[in-house]
Length: 362
Image (cartoon, rainbow, N blue to C red; front, top):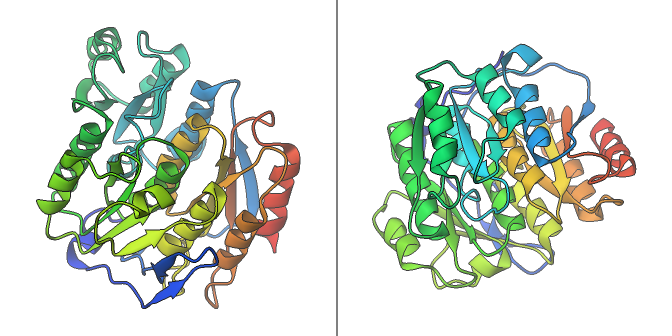
């Protein structure tokens, strides 16, 4: 089992950026940062594993089983983060919290706890451990919370009056869990999902919060959080919508489309040649046209300290393949050793899986 130090490295180290340079899409971004976490090398031959189920619930469970404990995964779950299955609004900011508590992001219907999800929670947790419930009672009902409480779990609901305030509530809980204030944050639009889920994997690896804009407008609750946390030395806008907001961002990460934005984000968070070998050694691939599989992926990849990249169903975008190659060649000893494809072959085709396998094996 390998585990990150969640506190020591980040509490002691400040994150710094290199000089700015233009991206292919004309976006000005700083060079990627070195991740201040040490971990042992995971020795393995390059491989690609598909984590998919019959639906969004069982795909999230498959990701959980790959990462945690008795299925051979490298982590021991400290908690579970539970999101509604029919809307991404309250869960865009969830990956850093899942990373901090070392737990999976699982899905449930708003009105009833899904059986496959309940069974996975029971596998992972003992009574007295925490299930974080995201959003108010319309998002996840008292019936779901009550079912979890009846089994002895501690249910902690994180909510605000809207998705923007809920993201701030998650950010505040993240700081409470860590015991220190993060020195960076990602800001992304709350009105669409692709940019935020790519941001979640990157920010989650650094244990930094994800905050939301309303398109190109920064809501008051988001701005208030940023203003109240002067220790935030690097605030990255992920996606063109967030980058257009009225704020002095330290980095603006976007490309011509969601696939390129995910690739630029991967380079920023994981592409530094001085990172430990394991950082960026795992890559994840999910559809860019729907969010549930990518949500489960974002939390898992934050734990594995690797990026979430996006794909079309039947063809791996060239920019995505190039992002994998860039991670392979970023340093003398760097190599991508593990790839995950999230979702069934009906969501991400076998041809795309084979394309990722080819890219990882280079």
